Length: 105
Image (cartoon, rainbow, N blue to C red; front, top):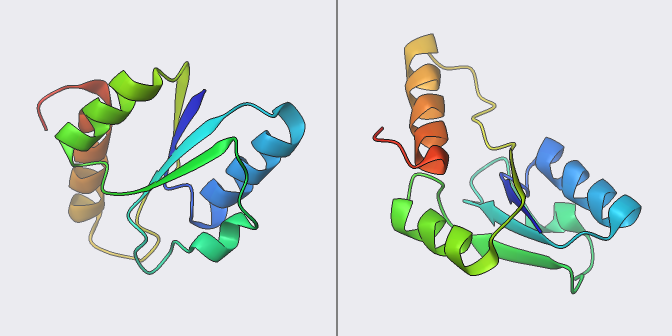
């Protein structure tokens, strides 16, 4: 079982689809579905793919997914693709990584 964040975006969806095709390993896919993510990127439903709409900054949700699914690894492909000031991108990235690691943001 893998946990993929941002798995409905361009990079994440390709990672999800190729991993499912090559390994058949189950995937929990957490994505906020903003401008960059779309369920259409993920193709037809797959019983080994669980999609959860949510934000990786939501600590309670992330904790629940980790406890429920016990993934062996996390692939963090969620990130803003728009150009924005460096500090905003860095702060957002740090907060998301801290949530996944269980650290204070």
